[in-house]
Every structure is written in structure tokens, then in C-alpha cells.
Image 1 (spheres, rainbow, N blue to C red):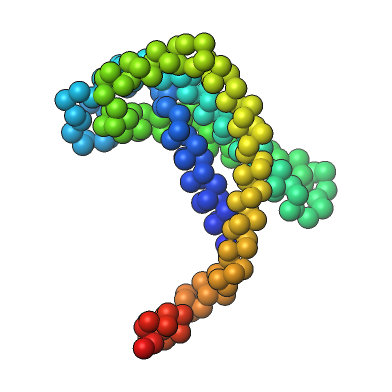
Image 2 (image 1 turned 45 degrees about the horizontal axis):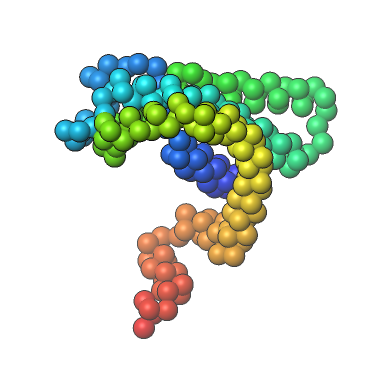
Length: 204
């Protein structure tokens, strides 16, 4: 349960970090988009978004972020794992390599990045995107791209450790695991009683 909650939080963290950058994807016809919400009249075109994607080198940034997160999670797993024989450790490492290889495949990155293009199109105008392209084509924009992988490399181990600690403390503070098991094993009438015990307003 702790592992699941931690993975969910780190997934949200990864998405929030990605949201501060821009998408990078291989060209896909607009008709292939799954997001059918109408775009504003002044929305940037799909081709314009791909130009921004290339200017920002977002695919490279996202891949670097995933690799950094992978290393942080593997280091955490190894530190928490019991002593293993060399054979078991090698087998487990091979399993993890296969898992992350499929999880972070080029096809999956394409899908994730392509899905966000319509969202950017609804929030940015054509002139906005032209300005962003100009910035990321400038020396300062290029420096930001160059420094981003190292920033993430330094940042991710810290934030992963902080997140893990916060998850564990929060779950302990609210008795998450015993309450979770109790909810699953209780019937509806018992759950109403438990809710009233936890909420003073309900018991008045």
C-alpha cells in the first residue's frame, strides 16, 4: 500500500514537471487526435506546435527526466530490499530494465506528448507560440534547455526522498493502512458510524 501511494505521488510529480515544459512528439494528423474539444480561432496549428516542440527539445528533456526518476526509484528499491544473492539481484535488475524499457518506450512518449498538444492549443495563441519559439531559439532559451537535465538530476533524488518521507508520515498520522483495511472489511452501517466518530460535526 505504501509503495502504491508513493508511485502515484511520484507519477503526479512527473506530470507536473512535464507541464512546466512543452510537448515533443512525432507528427500526427490532426484528425488522429483523441481530444475533440473545439479549439479557439486563434489557436496555433498542429504544425506550429511541432515547431515549438523541436525548438524546446522537449523529447530529450522528458527522456532525461524519466531516466532520472527511474534511477531514483531503483536506488530507493535497492536501499529497501533485503540482502539478495548475486543471481537474484541480477535477475531483479533485468526485470526492472525490461519494465522501464517498456514503460518509457518511444511509442508511449509519443502518445503522452501528442495528447498534450490540443491542451496547449487551447491555452496559447498563435502569437504566443511564435514568442515561445523565438525564446527557445535564443541563446538564453538554449541555455535553459542545456541546463535542465542537470537541474533535474540534482532535484529528483531530493524530491523523491522528501515525497517518500511525507507519504510515510502522512499515512502514519492518519492511520491510513488500518483504516483502509477496516473500510474494506466493514459493511455500510458500520462505515456511517466510523464517519461520525471521525467528524465531530456529524455526531452533533
